[in-house]
Length: 181
Image (tube, rainbow, N blue to C red; front, side, top):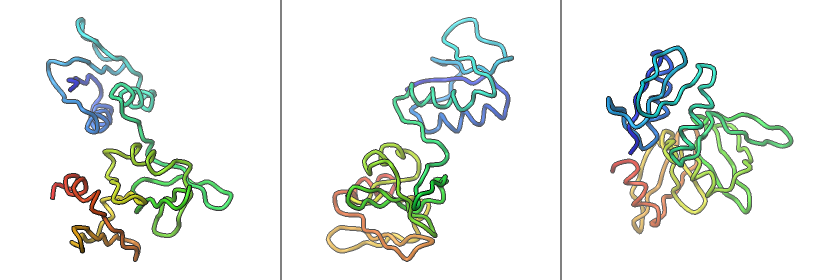
């Protein structure tokens, strides 16, 4: 586990803490790495990472790369007919795989994605999305009701859609652990 310290403005400090929350890290007064905003004092010993406020995007991406996780932008790009639209993660109810295609389903539309289901699963690890069967990844913030179902399965009723999605037996244990059930 990486121990870090942030020497930065309060605004940048909160942004970095938010990003570090998803990584295997802990803030410490005895850090392995000090993240320093340009213009603030750099410690004389230990490892320091100096950044400019206008480089936050690059800093966050670097921190994810160092942790071995893939950084996820705040929006994904979905295709509807011949146009592309940015999709906010919080607007996506679930992902559905059909044949060789993956669709991001929102309240109004389904958008074709360039990624495969397993790639999206890895990309969205730690982002409120969980794989629930061989064809679906669900946004847990869009679950309206969790219903115990036949044969040890679970049925999910989702907000903003009449769709019901089954958590199959192979995924029930991980689903329950993810939600601390």
